[in-house]
Image (cartoon, rainbow, N blue to C red; front, side, top):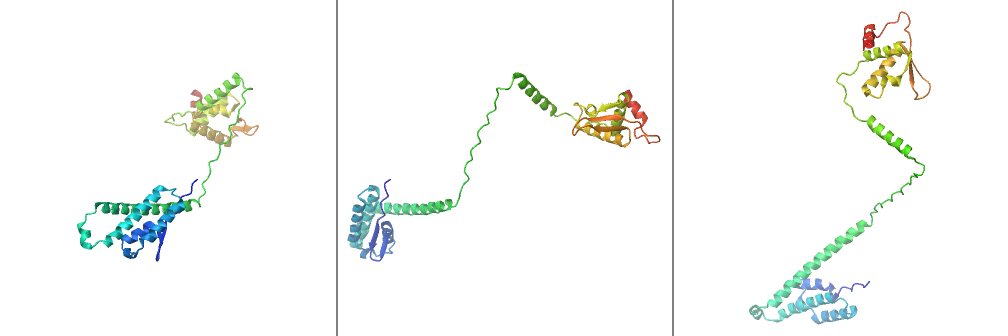
Length: 261
């Protein structure tokens, strides 16, 4: 990659800096243009062009415009004041406006360069998190799967979806006493029964809770016995006759009504 040519720096008297800054100081009368040796500046300008071997013609042209403007400004000092007012120099005015625009553009570029340098220094202190790669997809062998096994898997999925389907809650939930009477009615016909047969798949969750509370209450009163052979296994409910003289928590009338239903 070709390196950018060095910037032309002028050394005249006490001044040392960029050419455009020198021209700006001359225009604002901060440097006495009458005492400014234009020949020295021209020699430095030509030496600079030879050093860069005319690689950047655009920059060389810009320096040439600034040098010509400097010569023009100093030549106006040599013209008498009365004669200078009589001469309408449109080209000189256009040259002045162009130079001012170039100086403003130069100031904008300098400001943006400083802003970019500050952003670069700030970005150098930031370490972003890299994008993590996704793990490779796991291959599932399908050679040992039969159509029968796939059909059973699909059937289980359909059954699970149907089980979680929302249902409407009845307006009149069953009471605890009514459920206790129903359980006693079932145990009159069968000596033992499974708890899962009392709940059933078609019952609401609230009915399952009431059934569990009814079983616990009947077990506390000694009307039935609950047993379980293994952890998370089936709960077996067996009928028990109440001890003599024990109070009946469930009236016989309710049991009779349950049997009638």
